[in-house]
Image 1 (cartoon, helix red, strand yellow):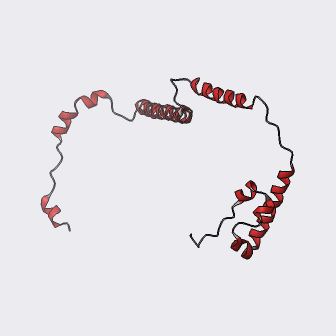
Image 2 (cartoon, rainbow, N blue to C red):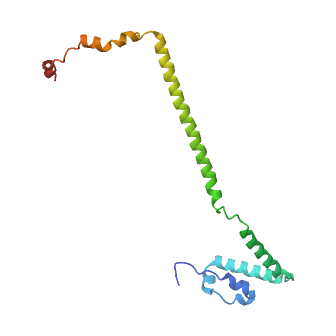
Image 3 (tube, rainbow, N blue to C red):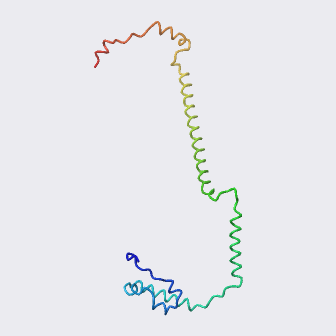
Length: 164
């Protein structure tokens, strides 16, 4: 027997036996040393004696048939469950619906942001084209010729070598 754990008082012995007889047997060592165990024992014996004084309850004549009917009803309830739906669909369906709602909302928000950026770019291009700050398209047609006439000077390598 494990000495680290206290002995458990056998309550079932009190319930099954006569309270006067059960007072003479049992774990006497624990009762002698533990006042809480004595109090529990006295409470159990008083409860058992009160329950013994109650008149016996008559069992109805159809008790067995009522029990069997309840068992049959429970079996019938289990067989009536829809075969196509697993029992756990109710746990994942709300989560999937919520995830779909979040993805749909995120897609709509992303699309609106992209459209907003494109509209802002179109407004900026329209404003620049109407401002007149850019040269006429005819000037830009001869851009390559003008660039060849006025070449940029080459970098001075000696000067660049002197830099630290």
